[in-house]
Length: 235
Image (cartoon, rainbow, N blue to C red; front, side, top):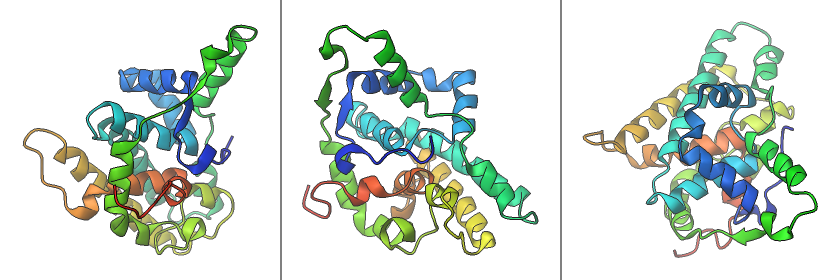
């Protein structure tokens, strides 16, 4: 369902075992399966909760770099930019319809299936635990002066473009030409940032270094970073 329910506590720190298992399977390579990729194209990634949770889990478990997250974001933002370009002369309802997910969140599906399979079994099989978020918190706080001004105006009063969740809720996109240009620019920033995480890759600028946050914000909405505990404090 789009948009999904708001993340619990706004920080995605409390994840069930089923959520963690599924997201870790993505990190282990399942996200590259062709069937999974086609599902993610149709669903525009994950829901807002699990989109941010995937980034948090990756940063906390793989040395602090959102590499797989950025690969997925670069793919989806590039598709969104192409959609805007192909439909620039068509009425707005056409691209708006295509920005709506045509499939459910992969992780939500797994959690629902797990609940059915484990029905009647021990409660600890789907217990909720607190995921360490030191690295994620530090990165969000350190980069806040860069990403805060470009948040969606409907999410947090920023000067950035309207995010996809608010667009599909009916928010006016403003200039479609500007939205197309923004997505093309974000796609380029994501590509540079992705390259900077590879051997002999380019050095990312400060703005390119927060492209993954920017991509998550446009694709899933900005509620998570805007409500993160102690936002703006010292790591």
